Length: 237
Image (cartoon, rainbow, N blue to C red; front, side):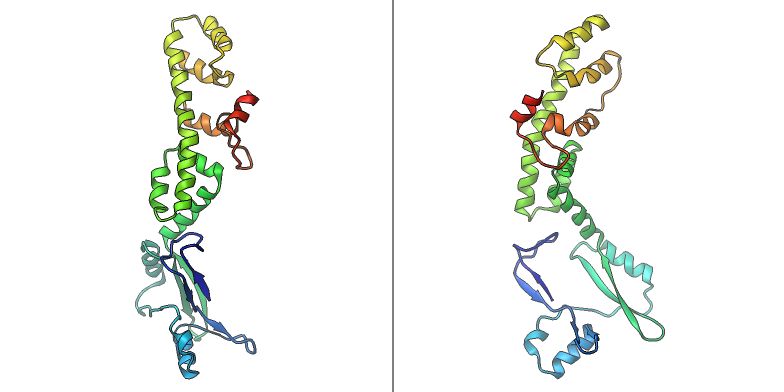
């Protein structure tokens, strides 16, 4: 059986609470019944209430090859996917799960929302709009995304602005005087030295990569994916 509800979901959102019967297994023989055999068993024994909760199923056309079947399921945009019964030539069978690409993507993104480090990376790489579209019905996930944006974006923008502004105002100086001024300017973090010298040498800075490398020092995201307060970050500096 599988229980789903709006408050008890891992990846997909379910609008109402529901209990679904997937299969039954005999404790004596170990035999498992599902699909048509399960329906027949429940009807025979008049288990009408259980019959109403059996998961829906469909037959696969005999001329549909396995590769095409997998592709068709992967391309679907609703639901998790299917459990497929593969019947061998000797009429024995086995079950396989085939998930949709949309579900697999959601599952991966769910990990991103639950991990502050991964969520931080999504904000820096400007991927949160896509993340929001995947979790438009998940208020908890949306709140996590918003909080990370509010923590990270202003700091990132301020970092880029302060570095670019310092360079523009002091690029006329000699290399030696420019480097000395960096060290003597209290408003400029010493960790920015390489970025500032890159600009002086007419090199292009990868600010996003720099931010990812210094997630803990600059943004309070530590190696254990726990946030530090801004005061703690400034105190360490």
